[in-house]
Amino acid sequence: MEAIVADDNSACGLDAVIRAAPCCRVVPAPIQGAGPARNAAAAVARGEILAFIDSDCDPRPDWIENGARALAAYDFAGGHVGTAPRDFITGEQKRAPRLLQRLALEWASRLALEPRRLAQRYFVESPRGIMLVLHHADRRHAERHVG
Image 1 (cartoon, one colour):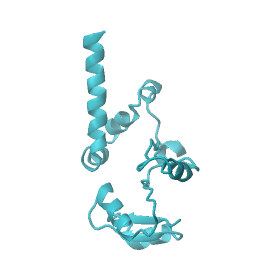
Image 2: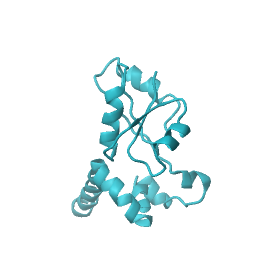
Image 3: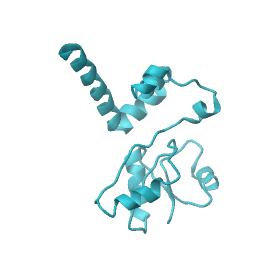
């Protein structure tokens, strides 16, 4: 297994990323965003299977094994990876209210707390963010008008 870290112009600089990831191959990704960073890493990868994860994800220890096992039966495998910002883990920032957590809307609470920083990430760099908003909006609309 090889681990490749694609640095898409992080504020700390490429040398700091190399020092922080000594067991990984670090490649520059000159265009910012998750997609271009993944493409930069994929371009230099030598393995048969590619597994992508972002720096703010906290995967289960067996996520790679489970993904490889799924690829024995399917062409593609994917799944939900919960993220836990370090501020929540250390207790420096409170989590969203339990109701928002249960409704899978914790991201919306985070967006309300840090709109400038997270709007770019959720709605520009991650089109999935837009789909989440539309999904929740459609469900709320349906619940009001159907039931």
